Length: 266
Image (cartoon, rainbow, N blue to C red; front, side):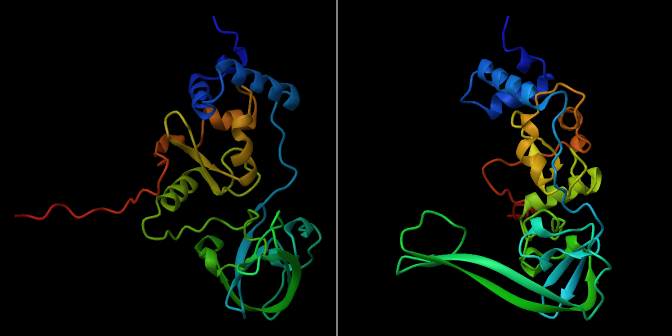
């Protein structure tokens, strides 16, 4: 009889997933971790205090040749950082011909041979930062955000979760095909919380079957859920809305789903 009661209180498929997910831990250690989460979370997992992509979105073409995202009435790229965007008091939506001011901060370093623009870090050499500002005029042309390729998007706050994942798959990208398939069945909002846009494939580590597509917050924390049921994340893990598709997540490589030509006749 095991004493790992928190682990064995979970449905069997979640227990097996946890064991495969934390292979360097014993069942008792996994159970103790779940117990600590249960004490910390209480009867249900907390919801994130931020929401992403939760308002109607449209991509607007600028005179810089890039597409800029409007979330509700607010332009996501009109502030230096997403945390400063106030979607509640954004006023009226910008019209064609509106000028959107852009501002972006960048940190750079060099060791005399290499020059890089990247985040702050313990780099040896000369470091510094700079702020770049420019204006973009909206042309009036619109497009669905999920049809805008990543390199065509304005890069300010582009990874903050407000842009729909692009459904135009590069040749051989099985992840994009699978993500689009699951979004078409389970919806474009997170399959666990439903509060923010679905972004990342999530899968069962024991079976390698994809469970769904989650927002950035849930993709990071969903498997911390210690609840057997009665919690929005437990409900997702127990009964994922698109789980019946039973598609495989190809671990360790970018499997090419293109059809191969058959053997040539002799």
